[in-house]
Image 1 (cartoon, rainbow, N blue to C red):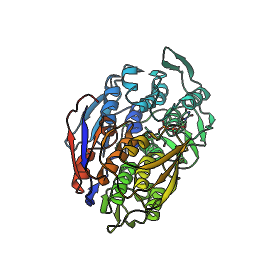
Image 2: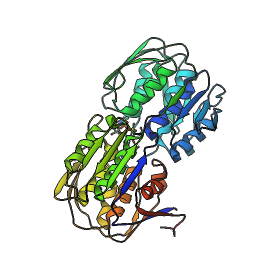
Image 3: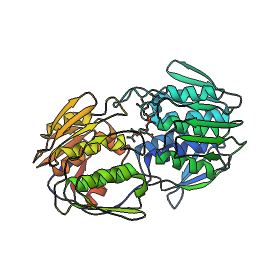
Image 4: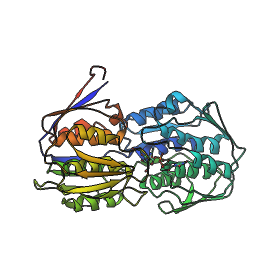
Length: 423
Ligand code: EPZ
């Protein structure tokens, strides 16, 4: 398995640009199933999860291409297979996002239940409840979701838990339903808004995306479109935390500061000097060590769970002590044990981590477990004395485009080992 080697102790100083958002491009690519014509998607990040999505769509009979501008061309008009097989779904849970579009456009779907996941049980019951409310007949057997509907009909759906992909699946199902659908307690994440904007560019009639109540007026058909994906706020936040941890200066261009307010507030609290433009954020620590900051994750616009591991790593080397409360997923502290191998002082108690900043971390071999936890280990390696080797970096490649190239561009001493001894 590939590994990343980081030599700590070098403050970052440089400029990078944000890539397209993983959690926006995945639902957008799957929403192309709904269109009666070809779609051209730009600002698509080069990620393993995008490759998996293209494989998933391709085996359904969707035609995919890349043009000279590196835009992804998607034409689902010849789709002839309504199945998302376990072999693909087990590598990417977001595959569940083909369910809504398939039932809406083709009246049927057979989607493997996403298996367990490192960060939590992550059920999809709300996705299924919403589709049933819209008239779909759902049966779960042999590890697959079997869904059928002549034509979905509008319904009022109240989600008892805020779910990002649940909101997205139901919004995609509703755009071709007969009548009006109202989704209450909807997720407000920027990626939900980006998907809504994409659907609107195809002719969908959606109001309220970005608020907790989304109203969708079903239409009879949707046309192809061209669309540029939202910049990735989590990638942006991850590089800013890298700058804060190393006491350096990092400027992220081609990003959207308005999607990161809770994170920018915490970086400011940690002592970072921030310059914020319309499409860039520059962080400068002027060589200072960050101050520890309390974190409590919650749905947007509160502090994002996808930035929790990165701030746990920041707190591990910060001045003072802080508590990190993970309120969204039940098991999202796998990075803690690994950070403690570097010398971090962290005590776990249920969904709370008490972190006391230490003056120094010491490089060691580490194991990546899930996407954002892996990124936090790379960040810790940037400040740990000596070398840190992070194994199983395929987790990182799922969500970060060429992370070591972008960090090297910022002055990090980092390289990828093609394979390591079996861990
Ligand atoms: C999305 O996952 C993101 N993935 C996750 O990013 C992100 O961490 C998460 O939202 C929260 O922001 C994509 O967008 C592809 P949820 P999702 O449904 O939609 C419970 C990353 O690192 N729930 O919002 O799967 C669930 O158990 C990934 O990029 C139900 O109970 O998360 C969890 O506790 C990790 N029933 C809570 O809701 C359901 O039917 C939030 O989960 C659905 C969810």
